[in-house]
Length: 515
Image (cartoon, rainbow, N blue to C red; front, side, top):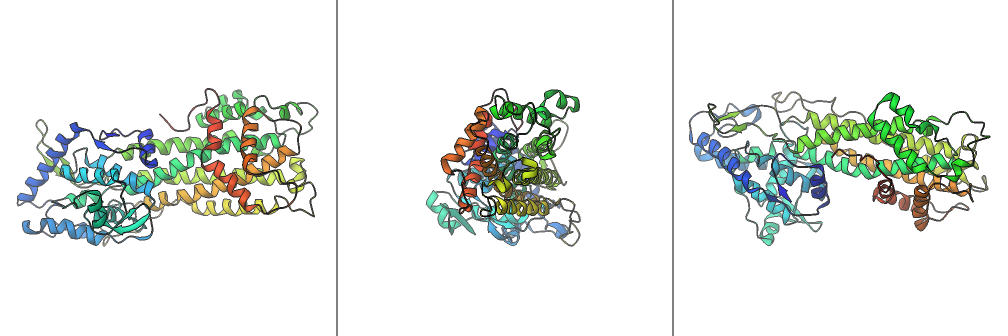
C-alpha cells in the first residue's frame, strides 16, 4: 500500500488494521520531508531559542540547551516519557499507530529526516509490534507516553512483540535487519507529539463496531418476526418525513430483511395489537441515530488520521513567506475525544435496545410466546438468566458511556491546563463493543428460539439464512442445558461478520461507513 501523505482512505486504514499489506512511501513525498528537516537543522545550528529544538519541554520551555546536547535532549525526552502502565495495546492498534505517524511526518511539516519515516515503515512491514502500555495518556500534548514507548522500541530500547511474544527491541530489530533509529534535533518531539494513539484506538473501536452494528439489524429483524411484530413502522414514508439519513437507511434494511416473511403474512389480519413495543417499532429511529453517529465519527477520525498533529510545526519557505517554526496546539485530541464519546453512546444504545428486545421476547404477556422461551416453564428456566447477563452487560455499557471528554486534569505544572482524555475515550470502545456483541448473541439465541415456536411458518429468506447459520452451531433448546457455549457461538456470528454478510447481500442497501 502506497502512503500518500494526507490521503489515507477508510478502506486503507481498515486494511492496515487487519494487517493485510505492507506499506511504502510515495516517492514524491520525500521532497517536502527534506525541506522541513532542513528548516530544523538550520534552527539547531542557530542561536535563537526554538521550542523542542534547543529548549526544554512543557514548563521547561524557557531552559536553553547547548548545541552539544541536542541529540541527548531527544534521547532523554523519549526515555523520560516512556512511563505507560497497563496491558499492552493490541497489534492492530499499534499497526495503525506506526502507519498514522509515518503518514503525518511524511507531510513535511514536522522537521524530521526521511530516515525517521522509513524506520516506522520498516518496523510495520517487518511485522514487529512495539510494546506500548495502554494507559498513561491524557490526550493532549500528544499521546506522549504511548508514542514514547513506540519510539523507544524503534531506537532499540524497550520491547517488541514478535509473534505475540515479548522480546528486547534491539534483538527484534537486529533479527529483522533494521538499524535502531538514532534521533536528531526535534525528532523525538515530533514522534511523541500527536494524536496517533488515540486515533488508532478510536479507529480500532470503529472498525470493530461496524460488523456488530450490521449484525444488530439482522438480529433485530429476526426478533420482529419472532414476536410477530408489524413491518408497518418501517414504511419509507414515515422516515422520509423526518429526513434523518441513518433512520431512512435502517428502515430500508428492515424492509429488505423482512420482505417475503410467511410469519408476517400469517398475522396481517386478526391481530388485536395496535402498536408494537418501542424496542421493535422504533428500531430505525434508535439504531439509525447510532448509524449517523458512526458515520460522523468515521469522518472525524479519517481527517485526524491524515492530519499533522505535532508541535511546533515546520513551514518551509514558500513565495514571499520565510521558513518558520510555529508553536500551536494541533496535538490536542478534542476532536478524537468527542468522536469517541459519540461512538460510545452509539455502542451502548445498540446494546440497550437489544436488551429490551430480549426482555420483550421472554415476557409471554408481550411476545405471546411461551414464558422465558421454554415449552415447560417452571421445570425449565429457559432464557431467564441469559437475559440477566444481557442486562448486566447493558448496565456496564451505560457506565462506560459516560463522556470522557468532559473531564480534564491539568498537567505539567499547569502549563498543559486543559486536556481531552481522548485516549481513554477511545480505549474503552472495544470492551463496550464486546459487551454489545454478547447482548446481540443472546438476542440471536432468543429470537431463533422464538421462531421455533412459530413453525412450520417460515421467516424471510435472509432471516431464515441467519437462523440456519445459528443452527449450524447451536441446536434449538428443547430443555435447559449449559447455555454459555451457545452464547459464545452466537456472539462469534455477531462479531466475525457472518451476519453482516447477510445484510450485504441485500440489494441497494447504503453502506454504513462513508466512502
